[in-house]
Length: 472
Image (cartoon, rainbow, N blue to C red; front, side):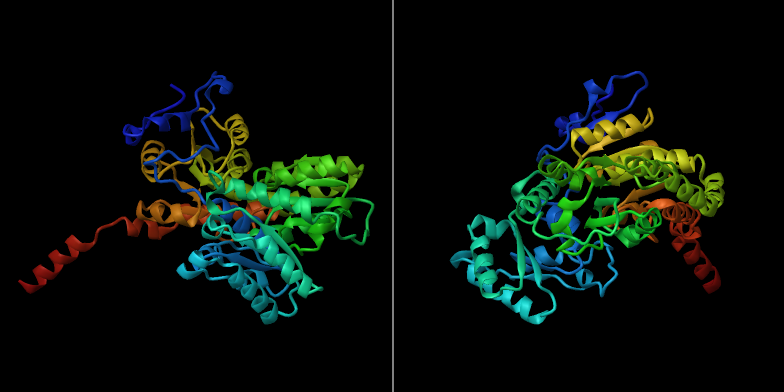
């Protein structure tokens, strides 16, 4: 019973191993869905590639760094301007992306010269930017271009620049999760320990796995400032390249997105002895718990309690207003990986919403352990869901709102079901106390939008009758 073969999957019976329906009293050790496995042929995956996981999720967020994609222009275009991660500078990371623009001739004869020219062109075009990340893509990895050799040549000629290489083409792993891992380990191997930060507080942390989606980092930074905690580096929301080279000097690693950046936290623990503390920052209860954990580590519990009391006094009344109006609503979550277990209990406990279906694009089995442990019986938990499964599960669960990204969101709109952008947000930030009120507001507005009712009506037949009657 717990592993379910959906009606649409009868031609791909292997999909049964990836679809779990939670029932009371079951031991999830026996029934975890298969995860982090290659997509089954014939199933239309919603996953991103490994290169995308490195560039779009992590590296591309750095605010003072040239993003050089060695490959066809499409690899650059499709990972540019799709996430909303602002910075407190001129938003260089949102405005620009660079590509070596590989053509067929370069694939045949090699693209190293093309990359060399593109790197120099980029540094010449932006002389104030002295940092760069160079990524391989599928074509350049297949033909064996040696990007490290080219990078070495450029750095020898330009003494004031620093360049990081990410050799993770799209085909390197089963999903974008591979790209997270490669960039994390590469960064700690090649860059951490090269810069010494100025220490201004006895309480120092790295914030790992927060990418400043619509200002999440700005929101959380207010809390660290009030607590007197210095952030050595954000990995990588609103971050500078060199800040992330100084991560070895923090006393604590605070990990938010464990799937995309837990790897570097583990390496920093092994190599530098920096403890790792995992937190959730969506939802009132989770955010308060995170502040308490961090303050307990540093022995400043009184500051933490004062901050929590201050934030509750500001925002709890507004949250409760939305909770009264959202209680009992049903929601499906169709996102990447850990956000499923970050959001599930938060929306259920703090907003009274019931999560009826969840799908992960790149989660591992440990993610599903957390998701299922926090989720309710009667909920679907699906790894690497395809489009037909999506339609069938929606028909069975009938959610009031979908939390997903723009790709699935386009399908949702055709069904006249409201969706909230779980990747780039609608009107964020969503982290922290104020951020969760923003999320509640967007839920409320989405489920009460009168346009949904109008969009579902076919006005053609009545309109035609009226015209005919007038003509007669």
